[in-house]
Length: 262
Image 1 (cartoon, rainbow, N blue to C red):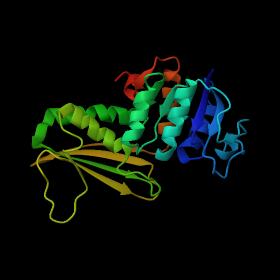
Image 2: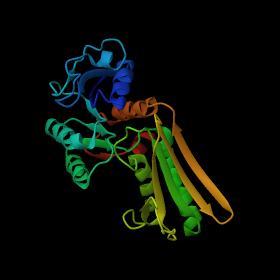
Image 3: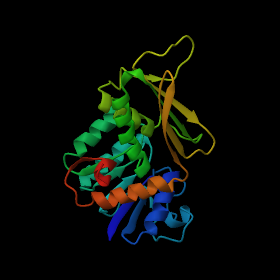
């Protein structure tokens, strides 16, 4: 049995993680964390997730040492959870997006002493899409324009999504492009397309769970690669699989490619 703690347990993703972890015979939920100002502190995590009682109360402090911590919180909370896991020697799976350079450096530093798996998207399909997008971009070359379009629910805080930027990074890695110099975020006014650039566009629509499309087009034809998530369980299942895989791994940085052998 693998003991897991979930940080951000009252959020949309956190609740599904709690529900699915409680129903997984290989996992035991031992802690459900959220910020000190959360109005649900003290309530049973299972009940908050819409399931049976779990026997674990929502808390702002960690009083046990789990085998793995899963973090789906917000950018402003990441430094604290990374520091906590590093100090207590807890492997960490994090899918929180919108991270800063400082956050990434903290993860790099912590990965010297604990195992950390970071992924902008835990879906099996999306991680396959990362690989395919890079492969297609490399094969087609700069004769094909590349545009990445993502859509999420109206409440999503960061834009573009971490998954969209993961796709862009995969394309840059495969083609030698610079994610800082060759990427164009949106367009307005007199702003013609620059050859070789990667366009990125973010849509915020109602209750859209997540949709990502990479378009490759030249004069005469267009190719589209699309992934659409119909339920957040897609990401939660991947995160729990990552947690099972990460237990017992040596210190270092890992991604879903390591879990899936891609």
